Structures are given as C-alpha cells and as structure tokens.
Image (cartoon, rainbow, N blue to C red; front, side, top):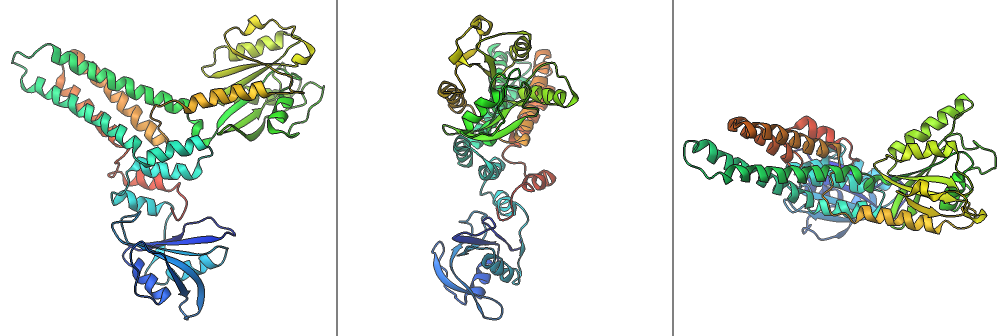
Length: 443
C-alpha cells in the first residue's frame, strides 16, 4: 500500500506541529531526512531534519511506530516539529519527495479500519470526538472509541444468530414432536431484541444534542422579556431590549455553557398576529425554532394572560419535548392564574434581577439527558442500519405468525446483516469513501 503523509495538527501558530507518515517507506523517509539509522520503536529521538539540499530545516522529535503496533497497523513515523505556518509544511514537502503522497481526508483512520485496528463505529467516534462541543459528548465518544457500541452490536448479532439456530431446529425437525414452548421462546427473544433496538433509536434521537450542543428556544408573545432573559444568560447585552413590542424581528442564536453542557440558546421573535411581512417571517421562524429545539422556554408575563398567551400555550401543550414555563416580571407581583400551566415545569423569575432558578432548572434537565445509560447512535448511517434491522424484524414476525419459517429465516438474516453494518461494512467501498470524506486531512 502507498505511503501517505499529512500534517496532523491544525494550521496556525503553536508550540508543536506534527507531520505524520504511514506506510512501508515511512522509516526509510525518516532515515533520509534525519541522516540517522537507529530508530527504536516508540522512542522519541531528538533529530536534526534536513532538506534535499542537506540544509537544516528544524530540530524535531521523531517517533517510529513499528507495524502492526501503530494506529494504522502500518509503519508510522511522526515528526514533532516546532509549530507555525512554515516549518511543518516544509517538512511535509520534503517527505513527499520520497516515494510518498499526500493523504486524503480520513485516510489514516480508514487504513486503521481496513487493517482491523478499529471497526466502523470506532472510526466514526474518532471523527465525532474531534467535532464534539460538550464534555458529555466527549465522554460518550470515548466509550465508543473503547468499543462500547461494538459490544452492543455483537450482543444483538449473537441473539439474532441464536434465533436463527432455533428456527433451523423447527425447519429440520418439522415432522417431529417439538415442544410448543420452542416457538414461544423464539417469539419472546425476538420481542426483546425489537424493544432494545427501538429504545436505542429513541434515545439516539432524544440525545442528539449531546454531541453538537442542545438547542434551547425562548418563545413568548412580544415584550414579555425574552431578550432580557437571553442577555442575562449570556451576561451581556446581546439583544436589544425596549418597551416597544416586536423589537426582536428575527431569531438570535448564541452558545452558552450551563454546568458541563454547551447549549445553543435561541431568542425568537414575539409570536403574535404580525402586522407586516418582515414580522410575519420572524414569527414563522420562531415557530420553526420550537420544532427544532430540545428544550423550550415559554415565557409569560406574571401580570397578565391574554389571547396571544393562549396561542403560545396551544403551540407548546402537545410538544414531545421538555418545556419550562417561565413566569417573568414577578417583582411586580403574580396576577396570572398558574392553573393554566399545571402540567408543566414552572419557574418564577424577574429577568431584571435574578434568573438563577431558571439556570438551575435548565441544568437539571440537561443533567438528566446525560445520566441516561442507553446506547447512542452517533451518525445517520448507524441510525439507518438499526432502522433497517428493525424493519427486517417486523417482516420476519409476520412470517413467524403464518409458519413460513424459510421466509422468517431470510428476514432474520437481513436483520443480522444490517446490524453488522454498524461495525463491519467492509464490502461497501462507496459507503466507506463517503464516510471518511468528512474527516479532516491528517486523521
């Protein structure tokens, strides 16, 4: 396989920059650039690095990882040079002169997959770990990198194979007197797998924000204090606050840390019967933000409840997501009837003074997301594989009911194939190319 190389650290000024080389020629390239012959595996050596004209380029740490005990399973050499925009590029240019080419995005990780060092779920965890924006997301992905999802997939696969074995007994000994409990046992086992996969899908959709940051939408009628709440959360004047209704005409989005969680907070335009075209667009975007949010902060004025408030309540009362009713301006007294919100979590605040109760309630909900122990799928590909496995199980159950055991077996085989795709989709070259194209160069 060709020797590849790339800069494995971000562009810009820094203390260290790493040039990574993987393949059969990696060690030979290191010897040529350093004019040294002795590179014990996994030992950092301080070396002078020269260009093709024997001029000094840098003094760097050079580490040799001998195959198969390396990330890619091939010989790897890393040049840990001084950071900056010049030195690492200079070394990379010299490396590429010696029977080596520039790596494609994700090619190091792809080689690790193809050489059996990791499986597809671990490869995707690596990519997501680089991009994740929360501590909880990093913890989740580290567990997947260690093989947590791989173990889950293998357990499901083994259970489906056991069902196949039970079914073969039925087919092979159809004319014998088999215990009636055998068929019920197959049905019960299949039911348990179905419940497990459905739970995994639901948990993955519910906790999607653990990697990219949960979305929190602030909604309410105009002039109810949404922008004041945003500014207080951010501890700065991000949104214009005034007594004029409709000051916020569009959604305003900012990132904020709540406890260990990074969230995307969205201040929306006041929802009411809009008077002009621009405000109408703002109201529609507000409604769209409600649909996309993981948590909705529905803000109401403590002093009144009118038709506009009723519209807000209608929008949120059937939402299948966390909703916090925020009763704002309580410093002026609470005149609103709280029975309107008896089925919701309620927080009473004055955005002008203190919103600590709201922050604590948000943290409580976010902590509840991260405390769940379900397995999480981290990519569209993984979710699709589980959904297809579930569909095959649904079809298999229909044939089990009618006693068409060969067709039942056929669909169980499909379910096994689909669930296995999460970890070992080696036969799908096009899919692999697409998966690794989203990786950064050098990973």
